[in-house]
Length: 165
Image (cartoon, rainbow, N blue to C red; front, side, top):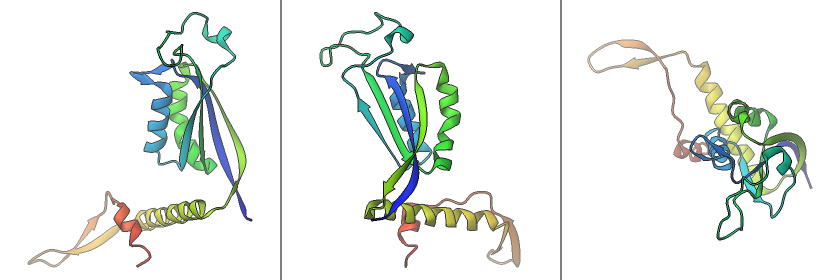
């Protein structure tokens, strides 16, 4: 068995905490996806501790759970440097009620983890190669070679799938 060191960002909040126009936990997961973090899970608790900080009587009763302030834990696992991409968003959302911790975790290297790591390495290699390209020569119809500066390179899933070809 092989293990690799990854980091886990764990965020404690509640389902009634709102950021802008949506629940905070939804906003965090959406931002994690936008940052292309490896994976995340929302765990819903049945009871929590810490209402004294948030204030009693804030909960609105609901038909399904009995109250809309049940605790939530959001766990996101990735490389520590990748988790740092989410920090500016968390600092901006920090006015809301949550606690965030980061800890190192030993992760069993499975085929899924290995495949995800290989895909990340390929993407980083493409980005590195793209960043080293300053100019490219382009021959347009009826003219000689011109030098053009590359401002943006788009990498699609199809590009990644064909890297092994």
